[in-house]
Length: 194
Image 1 (cartoon, one colour):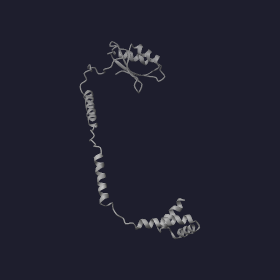
Image 2 (cartoon, rainbow, N blue to C red):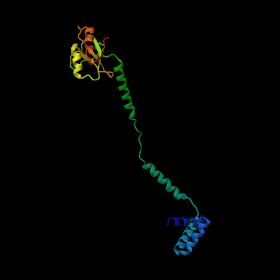
Image 3 (cartoon, rainbow, N blue to C red):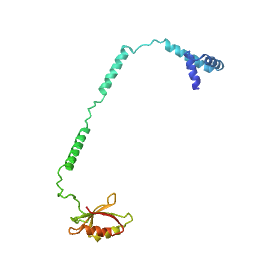
């Protein structure tokens, strides 16, 4: 029915193409209800077009201005938002500055040694000579422990990403003897003495 309504509106306005207009007029001749609706639309169109287009006039303009003033009076007062990001940015800048000062400034906790580490056992790391060693990838923890204890050493650091372990030896230990003892094991790939 939507199609017929559109056709009726176009017919009443005189904008329906010629072929469709003849087909619609034939339908209106066969259907009296359709013909009455078409005549109603044509009469409505002519009535609307015959009325003069007038503005709201003085009274309408005054009512419109009064409504605008009422809306302006009712409009809530919007206070300017406080910019809460400014204090947050200042605080973040201060934190960054303090961290930079702590990282780049003098280190009060440094005791002057090159490495400021302590073993997890709580004992102080050996201050004697150090050797670096690499174990065979198939070596077990028992093998590593056997090699470390054979030279009376302790693991100072490692294993690194390359598998290098640094051993600390007692102060009176001979580096050459420790290297020879460690190289004697099949599961030790390399021993480096600085």
